[in-house]
Length: 474
Image (tube, helix red, strand yellow):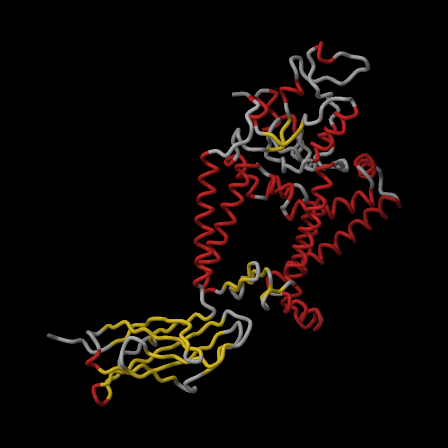
């Protein structure tokens, strides 16, 4: 079945020509009320992204994702491998929240909050405007031969892009290895830490490639979130939309003519000026409806509002609206699907909150030594050997720690250490211990014993272990 001409734009990506080559986008510099709000929010988020690895709460880095050491900090809360279930719940909450936001407000996350959009539009694109000028000047510079002016502007732009990419790569590394380690590596000199220098260079090249060449293709081709848009959006979702009923009228859009009664001729308010197309950072025509490439950046809204003001027509030809709002003037309301997502999100947040409240600063794991059975001693005493591991999740040493047997009468002996020991901050204390219990207190060959972790005789954690004894025959 052949695609109608009005829908042929959906058969290909807006940044690819019919010959399959890259169609470079030279967007016009946006200006307007939404753009001013986006700048304000973007600079706050930029400061957040750049400073988060260097902010500490109770000695914990505000945000850290140390995959190699399996240590994560989220909003100052440390997550160890033992807390992986908490980390998973946190990530699920993030996914459900973004899903809910997309169902309700479309791809607003991409246009207002996404780091790719913020760095591209509010940093690299603004530098490009400063060096090469607005849309028409950039297109002229791109077409002209390589002369001194073009070489000077391009080299200046590329060098600045490279420096910023290097700085972003350093911040990215601080998220991965920790800001303290990064600052230490910098003070020691790059040659002292070649294993870190090479990843830093790779990150720099990747960021430079993304922001200097790949650009909007990240949002269109690479980003999986953009692909979810078609699944999550419906006719009730609020998106950046063109009011086709008002813009097309009965006889379609038409360029404006002086002293022309457009209403009498049946033409819509759209004057086909193409300014909404020229300002789009992904090169689409918003008048074709919701498209994969649209990141809801609102640049077309501001540009269209300027045109409407200049010809004395009401603003809002392009605006935040749902398809139902445009077609039937139905106001936004929570749908059953949105309410379902809100309910799931509330349950998950409550679950995470409860988990965080019951989470201990010290986590103990005691396991029987592999390959070892029990030992039968004098006076009918049965002995088992165990290994213990205590994780200190805090930023201070926990002193005067002792282990005691809680469920059975018996004796617990630590190997190679005193009865009390210290668990270093954000570290692990581990060793070996013996548990001795009279055989008369055992019930069969397998027994579950409970061992308490005490600090200054105050119980701070409990754990269980399997204790082996002789098999009883009755």
